Length: 147
Image (cartoon, rainbow, N blue to C red; front, side, top):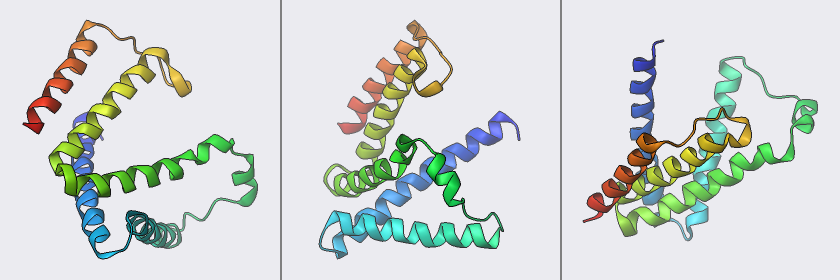
């Protein structure tokens, strides 16, 4: 696949993330606590992933493989709970666009820092005036989307 096709897929996935936030936010209204909604969301994800691994005959990771992983690689699940619970809590208060754009700006600024310093084994992509200007424009977009 070429980069343009992959970017279109990424944009579609971005739309699905907004839809996921809306669904989880609405789920939270029916339950007693936002963490319960996150639990249901991750439970459904677990069932879906189990089905995919089984139907596609990918198989499950072996226990020895899991033991060999550095402990910090398990942080993705922990961070996922923080993300999902925050989104479903913030959307009814701030609106979908405000939450999505705010999250995007946070992701981009952290990503620019990671790129600049090459944290986590990522390739170094130094911050220059063009990338810095993009960051300023994102902040402006965040300001204007909230008015």
